[in-house]
Image 1 (cartoon, helix red, strand yellow):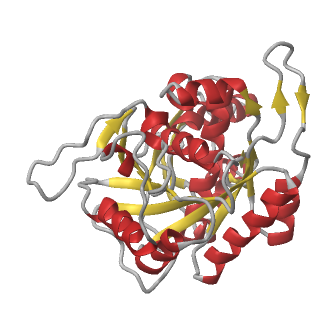
Image 2 (cartoon, rainbow, N blue to C red):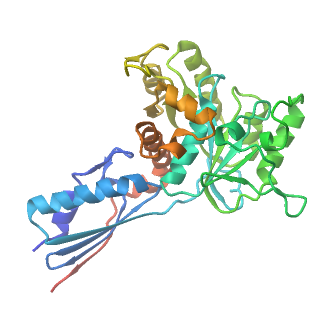
Image 3 (cartoon, rainbow, N blue to C red):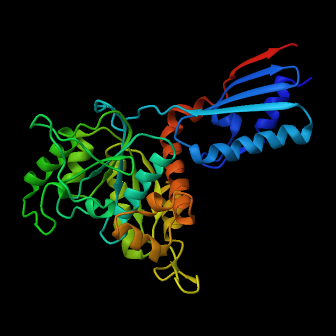
Length: 362
């Protein structure tokens, strides 16, 4: 007869790629029910992972089938997203569990493109997600999301977020004409940012992704001083000058006790649209070196691919256009890794505890 110890030993041979630990050590085993040769397993992730569930269920069934330890295996997989706050002195925002800042030290590294696709990826994986375009001087999310209409206000005081591809979004770009320059000094910019955040009816969100402007200026300072940021993601390219500025952004978050969830190396290789040849035109290995030097995880690398530019410029980013496509799956894998890193502190450390396991005789 199948035993509890055999179940645990077999499950410990499976590595969860987004947490890089085995299933038992990750602490996601919630319950095991044994009835003769019938086995029921319940797993609960701390982050959205819908795209991985079928793979994991298949691997678990394969393990027990190969060992001939159970006639039937039922695997139930859920996820429960909890709130996290990086700065302990700040209270969580009403209705928003986690604020994730997407930052870059300089412009031109594909930060906004990455931010919108990460937000979409978290949504596709099963989370309620909002996207705030905090780049007041150069708002680009309306173009990337294919929406240029003004948001609705039901009370004349607050704004309803613009819904696009399942996301709740807000940007100053929704409020001005496309070619209107924002000729504002720093205090006006930070006030506009705070109003976009606080005067929007976000509803209940698991994650609010904030697309920050480049650098470490007024908006970044306002964000880390007044907003409970759960974690930050740093976008860079392999180029040395981009890495130099990315390090500055990373250090800024570390100094104010905001966890850096990881680094994303964008434009890692150029993929020819004619022959699919890959070439590292901006250098290679920069993100990996930065991750090793700063002891911050490398969440993944993304190619310089014409399809990313075409789909995003047309208002249908790759994750919205082709969530099961090659590029869409890249973004989704990175999003799962970032969300997993966010829940490490509260979930992984308790992974060795025993789940509620019941053994029931026939």
